[in-house]
Image (cartoon, rainbow, N blue to C red; front, side):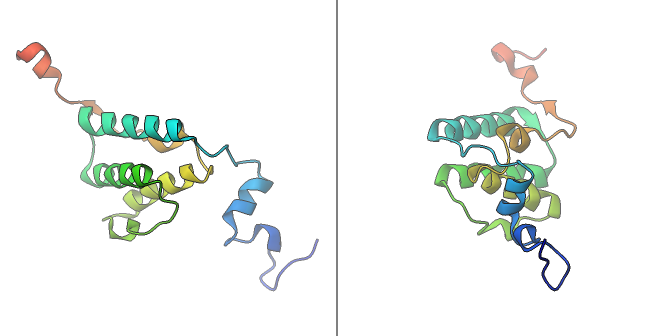
Length: 125
């Protein structure tokens, strides 16, 4: 196997993530428009009904915009406040390219707490 000057196999060099994913069989089918719309609905639901840290909330807002616009680049993600929020927003682009699943994108497992429980039927419980 031929290696580049850094000792890496050129087919799976650190800058060639899609090829790396193909070698690891980590590529998923690219989502259809229906899949993307369902994912946006899931994210909007999470934003509306779950309490999450502000950086995660801003990341999911950015992810919803990326999916609505059908963007396949990382433009604008650098403006997010933390590494964690930028990584989460980058998953939206990866989802568009078939590099991760909806479950990965929407599966943030922090301490999620339902909002609006006291507002059922217009009454406080």
